[in-house]
Length: 119
Image 1 (tube, one colour):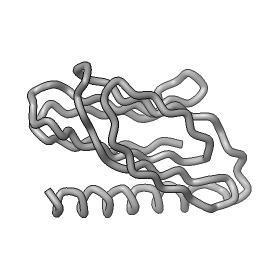
Image 2 (cartoon, helix red, strand yellow):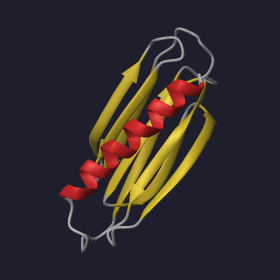
Image 3 (tube, helix red, strand yellow):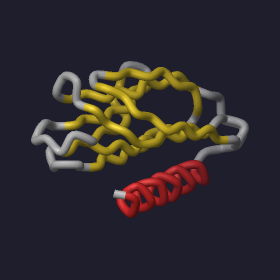
């Protein structure tokens, strides 16, 4: 499990850094919704990174029970979540901006991981 988390965090950092290099440092922050959905009461954990318009970033570790929605403000949002229950249910992760889905992914694998990023 520890190796999966290390790979997950490394992938998240690489993805955000790539997307951040494509955005202007003077970009205005936008409102995003991070939506975590799946079987009711499924437990998931992972991390979220938000790059702000001034080039700074904020990282947060999450452990939540589904469904869960989190509003964030920034220019780039990246989320990597892993199922904790080992069950067969589906975990869906969406990033929404201006009522449009800008990134989404899902997994049905036991202890599956979903990593998405949007701007």
